[in-house]
Length: 353
Ligand code: PMP
Image (tube, rainbow, N blue to C red; front, side, top):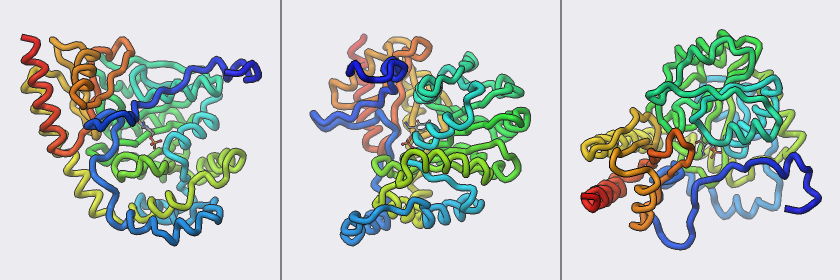
C-alpha cells in the first residue's frame, strides 16, 4: 500500500474470495458456481454482432433487463435495480440504509461485515442458534437495518417467508435486506412481500442458479422509492455498471426459464443424494436448501479434509472462523463430480483407520 491512501481505507479488512486457481484443473466445489453451462440461448445471444457493438456504451437504464425481471417477479420495472453482481447491490444498500446500524448473523455471507466496516457502520452481530439456524425473533423490532441471507450461507438453512414478514413488519422505520442468492435451489422467496412493505429489499443474482457468475449481474427488488435510492448511488459512482454482453446474457437467461428450472432441480436432487452419502459416512450436514452442502466429520477436522481433498484435485471451501472451523462448504457439482468427491472422501476416511 502507498503512503497516500486514506488511512481509514488502508486499515480496512478485505473480503477474501474463494480460490480461483489457474495452476491445475480441479474439480471446483469451492465458490458455489453452477455446474452446467448457461442456456443455449444465452450463448447465442453473446454474438459477434454484440461484441462489435462494444464500441458503444451499455444502456445505463438496463431497460430491457428490468422489464424481463419485472415480468419474472411480477412487479413493475420501477421496482427493479440491476447491479454488477449482487455484491454491488448489497454494497449500495449498506451505503444507503445502514448508517444507523445494521444487524446480521455471526455466521453468514462474509461480505456483510466488510461493507459495514467500509461505511463505518455500527454492526450488531447476532449469533446463530446452536443448530446454526437463525432465530427470527432476534431480528424483530431492532430499530436498525437488518441483513439476512435466505437461504443463509454457508449453512444453507432456510427461513420461511412468514418469519421474514415478521422481521419486516416489526422494523417499519428501517430497511430489511434479504439476500436470496441461493433461493432457486429450494428456498422460499420474499419478493411478493415487496409489494406490501416499503422497507423490504430483496436481492438476487444471476451468478448461482443462472450460471452467469462471470457476467456479474445481480438485482434488487423493492418499493420504487428504494430502487430510486439505489439508482442515485449508481449514478454517483458508475452509471454504466452493467456491460453490454452481460446485459444480453442476463436477458437471454430470463427467456430460458425452462432450461434453468430443470437444471436447478437437478442440482437440488444431486445435493440431496450427496448429503445422504456424506451422512452415511458419518458426517453431520445441515439441511441445506442451497447449491452447497455444509458438513463436518468428528474424526476429520475441517482444514484436514480441505487439504486432503485439494491434494487429490478437489477444491472445497474451508472457513477459519472458530465457530465453523470443523466444517466445510461443498458446492454441489454434477452427479459425476459428487460421485468422485464421495469416493475420495471414503478413501481419506479409510486412511485414518
Ligand atoms: N450473497 C451471498 C449469500 C453469496 O454467497 C454471494 C456469492 N459469493 C453473493 C451474495 C454475491 O454474489 P454475486 O456478486 O456473484 O451476485
